[in-house]
Length: 350
Image (cartoon, rainbow, N blue to C red; front, top):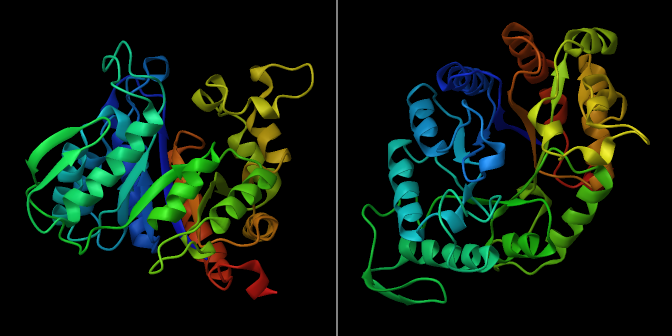
């Protein structure tokens, strides 16, 4: 198992720069500690979820982070394809591939909302738009010359992009998989990494993994457990009790207010009951000393049958700056080396 980050930026600053600086600090620290990759959330297409410090364009952040890091690979998690012209996305990705020296990964997804009120009425069904956009982007990256396109959503002649990707035939691609079987099957079909959110329960994750593995992929890259990315919030302290004390003063905030955690509300309760302590007690937040955190990650690994990359959910003001730094250092120094011994498939480990 390898380690990455899911920088799901949702902080609480009334202006953007301090939040961006904190996100950047975590990426630079992760690079120093040997974290393999980072996926940077991109928020900005749903009016009801906006905050002053949200990050609406991950690519700009990634290019700045690339100048301050040495080895970590980065990608948007994700670019919502229905809201952008595919040739612009293809061009942006290719430029980032060059500017990062080949450390850029593309991240695609459906996004939230229908665009009305912010981007205007979309010209078609979002899922149809995403699927066609992916095919168009892949063509723009790999076509030997100019090409014509006559799709359901987009049409044009003599299309091309400048520059072509630095990475040949193109950079790695991941796609957000959280709700439908179709997206998991699309990830397998295209040879993309499936990015799985930090909110599904283990049983749901296991179902998603089986759908992905059961789909047909390209001969050169069939779906494997090693391609699967699964995320969880992790906080490492000296003891489970200390972890609870450290986090007790912090609210979950936006993820709870959005309704993404409603499945965990106690019977007869409200979203106000979605506290740090509750999420730790339910086993959804992996918090404690290094041994207990390892046990929690290993239990998730066993429950889903194994996977390739464990993503640490960050980008949130859950813990102070110093506490979050210490937690990441403890994880990478005392937990990650043990997880590295786990092969992608739990059956292989057994």
